[in-house]
Image 1 (cartoon, rainbow, N blue to C red):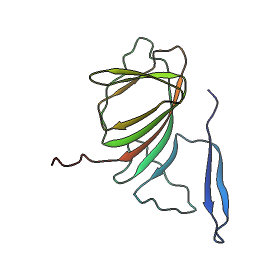
Image 2: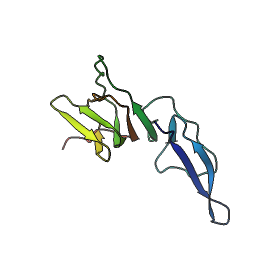
Image 3: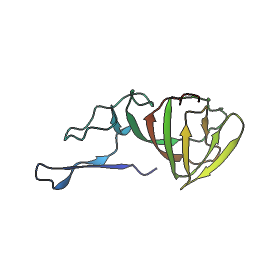
Amino acid sequence: MKPVRRLVTIDDERGKSSAIADGPAPEVIWATDRTPARITRQLPSVPRSFEPPPGGSVCRIVDVLPDGARKPPMRKSRTLDFCLVLEGEITLVLDLEEVELHAGDVVVQRGTRHAWSNRSARPCRIAISSHDATDAPSS
């Protein structure tokens, strides 16, 4: 698949916008350690985990290879995830159903048990923006 390009922008001391990074995207496109996020000229250190730090967020581009004979594991996280299928097709596996997704489809994943299953013969690319979340108290 084509490499992902990451462009990072900032306003300078005079309020003029410019790029401070432009090149192949690292494993993590961007991460924050709190909300509201701090805007600085420094590029952030990035977590090695898929989950953001408490109060933070992580944005990644994920390439999911075809499953072959393996069954993808179910997982559950304490995050609100915005997932955009960029290329290919993939199946979102939930406990009670499976949903086939194609390029351009968006999933709002709200801390549920799930797995991503690529049942096609080609890789699938997904942009995932994960945000720390908690369960709302019952009323």
